[in-house]
Image (cartoon, one colour):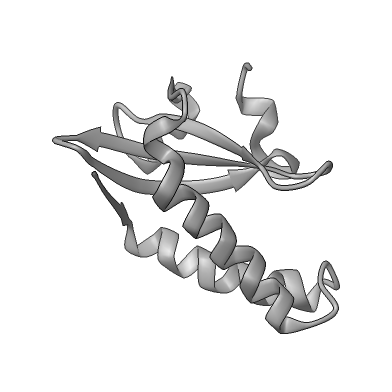
Length: 107
């Protein structure tokens, strides 16, 4: 099993560190880095064990025939990981959270 992140998703993850720190979600930049690294580690180590669901058509702008899984990081935030899966490779195309995209999902 292999997990690959699209270029856009990799950029998003790097920018997320700055957003989390600059918007005072974390008091220290190191804590924001650890949070994002933990999310990436969880995706890489656990995506194959998660129950994947077909992504709603709204997300077709990120790729066709995608699936998604969710990761609850704390009591306030759930991250949704959108990906294509083929030949034992998970290609991560988009990452969003319940604060921005949950209204497009039906769980």
